[in-house]
Image (cartoon, rainbow, N blue to C red; front, side, top):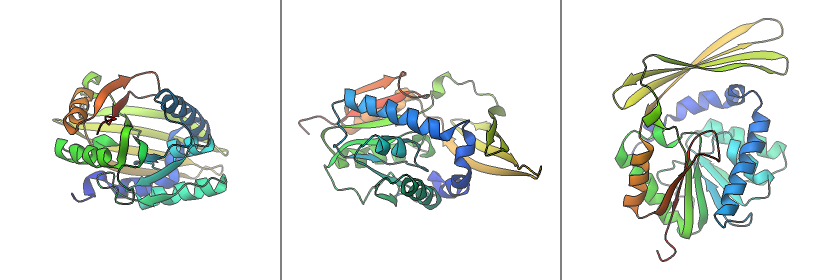
Length: 258
């Protein structure tokens, strides 16, 4: 297996305690994304009792949303900090979700041929920096899915994003528990890759101010290329949906006869 460094666990370890600050209302996002994904799974013939695994769970935006609706969901992420935050959040809500630290390129903790669906949302796949690494992940997912099972990923549509460097992308100024947070992304391009810096400034009620800078790297892999990698792995019915989440969603199915 490739080393986990490209997935940048340290980036998400640092971000985990503050991740909710990137949203105007993270709890609302959890609810809305859970409903959207639950509806998608239902359309794909996957019920709440069918086993679903979130292979890039982060602090639980999608996992918690699905579990709150009764879905049989497990979770993993390469970031120990994110997984611990997920555990804290699910326990606080009285949800039973088995979660563990694991790279989405191996998923050793998931038995072969058991899953109805594998999820990887919030542009997690482009943290894999080569086609070979992405293909490795898709092969593992193929093995873990049962016949007819589906892979569901959400990604940015890089083919339609101008390559401006630096590209400054504000999240916004949000209020949480009487405090203010201002988050800004900065993208700096290098060919098919870009370095991402998140500047996260928080201001407390007593006007104390702190800025954190978190850095990672992305591969601007196109949706067309991802669909090709799914097809090369043996997935069928590969499709793009723009009506599910705030990013395009790709769906790929393992054949029933596999």
